[in-house]
Length: 245
Image 1: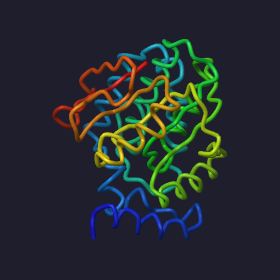
Image 2 (image 1 turned 180 degrees about the vertical axis):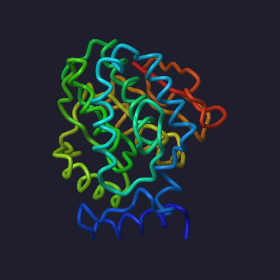
Image 3 (image 1 turned 60 degrees about the vertical axis):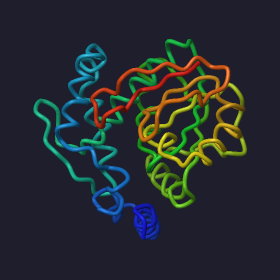
Image 4 (image 1 turned 90 degrees about the horizontal axis):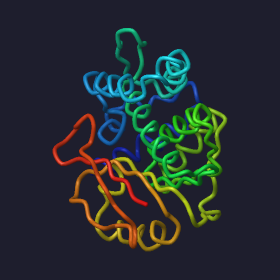
């Protein structure tokens, strides 16, 4: 089986479990695809948060720790100890840093009741972090749609429901949305990327942020200004943070 078949089989098993029995975060079949940030990378993400979002971190450190613990409450993740922070899954610190980058960009664009579309949403962790952190920045997330594999979408619904969150139906997609896709869109085969470009991105997304890997950056958003910076911290050569508007 391919790694994605193993990934889907792990999800299928977890969909049958109660919330307290969920164990996908420490399953190697799942970790091939997600939940594989190591402790060194986690520390690098935390250091970036402390540097680039210092005021926010200092004022809300305890709340940030509680958010990490909240996300770690289900799925039985592998955890690491971070000095002067807490013991948590390093993946939380990636979600934390990248969510702050996304929120910062949304604020720079002057958006308020933002409609977010995510391509490839894992178990819903990025949504959990964006939604939880947005209130600190006077930002309202009006809707949140995720496109993913059928099995992954079912896990997202289950996991987010545990945390009191619900996704917007794909049928309610609307123009003027903000695209998010971290290590997902750029990993797709060309024919699937083109399908998303034609049916989602160029129909509904006016802005976006992507963590880009796997293929060279190209003009995937028509009539938009696409810019990029080198991914921080670097997790693989040529990875980028990509913005468009």
